[in-house]
Image (cartoon, rainbow, N blue to C red; front, side):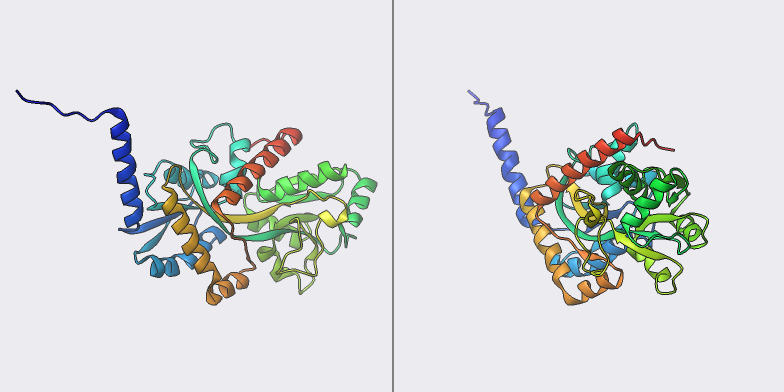
Length: 324
């Protein structure tokens, strides 16, 4: 008589768990991809390419950066969200596709909270409030007073509806009870250049973009939009210091993996990325780009993504921001 052996459902789960543990312990055994969901030469792409070579050295496997741009970062993010949860496909994400787009767009093909395993933040840069020098404004309080004296007459440029600069200005409108008028442009460069030319009054933009126009006086930097003063701009006050303690609009970037990536792999990635960021030559490269170091734990990063998602959802709902 032949005895048939079968594996029950509980035993099958145990075997799957053991196999997953073995895979995690042997990770990495092949090349790793970092998906940059924006075009080459931007900050997202730059960060990934600064980190990748050293990360490759430390892990002993090639780390390749792939640009999968489109749909304001959603195409690349979707690719990673639907990739195998094995630690070989990572996303260099940022505020837009991890916290803002889900509230701004009617439908996106992934859930930034549910579909990713956060690894660590990498860097941040403050958004700064800059004005054309013809505007009689040197502080945030000056701007608020002028806007109240001339309601609807002061405008602000942005790189598009729903961009961080748009949300920053609308947050200031809401917080200060003023009405700055929105002028959306098709991209950051034309928005910035129109403020430099005096065709728009002010702009919330990255410090990196604004800096070339400050020494010559073609733009005046009024404040940084982060919660605390930036290490790269310690002399510039924050919007929060003008009486708005919850005002915090920073550009930031971080690495996430597909949801359910083994814990051992996530922690190894976090450790190795932190080691890369701590290298003097890497810190120097980031500083040259006006980027501040912003590393944290997977748990802290997950909590930050959730809190930022809730913050922007509330603001977008309250001010009625709609996509183009």
